[in-house]
Length: 364
Image 1 (cartoon, helix red, strand yellow):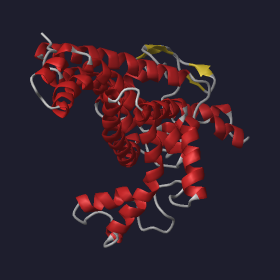
Image 2 (cartoon, rainbow, N blue to C red):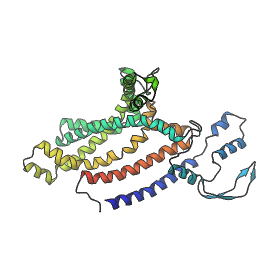
Image 3 (tube, rainbow, N blue to C red):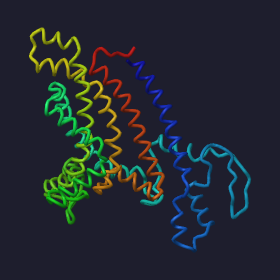
Image 4 (tube, rainbow, N blue to C red):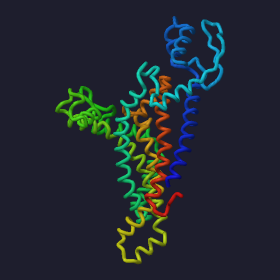
């Protein structure tokens, strides 16, 4: 097992290096730059001003290692070797520095911007994933055990509907029904206007034993309840989306397990049907689901782009959209690199979990 893990870690390192280079080069080859809108909005800004601003951000340097021939006031200077913007950026990333924002919060460290958003994404994604798992697995098992029953047909139809409907549509329908029609939940945002704080700040205050956010003293419970009302609709949309697919995976895997010889042997031993299903069937049926759940880890931190945008939820997904809209490549690169790392890590974690769930699987 240890040799397998070391080999996979080495492969993952090479893969991440390739992904980071691809992301950096592709993003920086996109037409336009952070100062294009500045030039359009102010006719007094000349190309020489833009060139000086690009030089401040190292945008005048080559992307990859190679010859660099600077141009100063229209005059080409002596060429020299330059390690390239990618190598300099990668060196900072290895140290945990994703650079500074260009346009969203000019000069602000991307690390701090990401840290300020990741709590909101974790709250939304962990809640939706938790509810999807605890609902999808029992439904999938029941549908498999009672194949072709009325409930099985209903769950199958619901799963197909949930997987075929895009989240932007279900999100808008949820707002239309529960916010506009029934007036139960807010349409979006993270807190009610005029509130002394939001749910993440309240949780931070509780975890810091009252040292953080002193203005919220005595109002933590009220703020948390208000935050739960705001997170309810986006959580509902994401839960429904994940629930549809995961219930089908559980059902399909469970149907295959139920036909195995060892299930008939377990029944022949006189074990109750519940013990046979849970102890002997479920453990083997969970193997495909382990892969699906492990691959949701990147989403826990990366967020849901469409859902967060529709509900104005200030998470990582919405931040990524804002970074693209504002041509803020350091922000976009930081989020994408973190997501890529989590994708590679979750695949490695899934392989290890296989051996935990099913003792028949071993790596030598």
